[in-house]
Image (cartoon, rainbow, N blue to C red; front, side, top):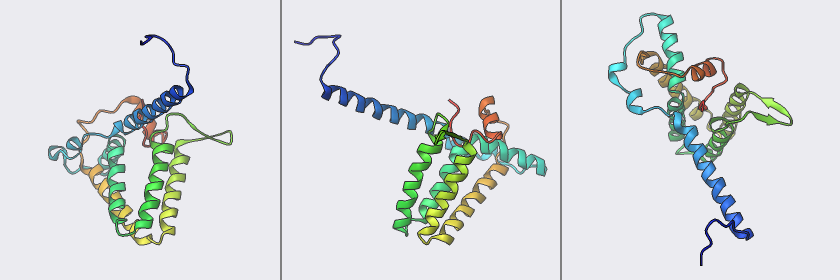
Length: 190
């Protein structure tokens, strides 16, 4: 006979429910963190492409597009880097481990990072993870492969950021302020 409304007292049931809760929370956090990925159709809309009139207009477009499409740009650069590492399996393993670090320390982190009682800002985390990732990849003897793929990715991002018109893009005030102040990095503002 089932007793509805009772709380299970066995430690096995509690352990399972805690594990299920943690697993569900991790999945929700990953889904929320990756939720800032903008639709690729919007990003690649050919009607929204055009050359800027002035250098100031180009810089303004680049800033706006960087704030709006930041997760898409990260996916593009990381995808190019991933493809360049397919012929270097050790480097690919290091890259995947570094990506796990990026996910949990930068993209999916909701609270400030505290190390030894000190608050670490988003810019410091971004710089630290960037240097660590490049250093680890360079230690696996893929110097020119890594540099070349990062340059190709950066060139594509800058080219798209300058050419993509911004009139149809709408950013939240918090999202724009956080990005332009350097505090928003690649995380969502939820």
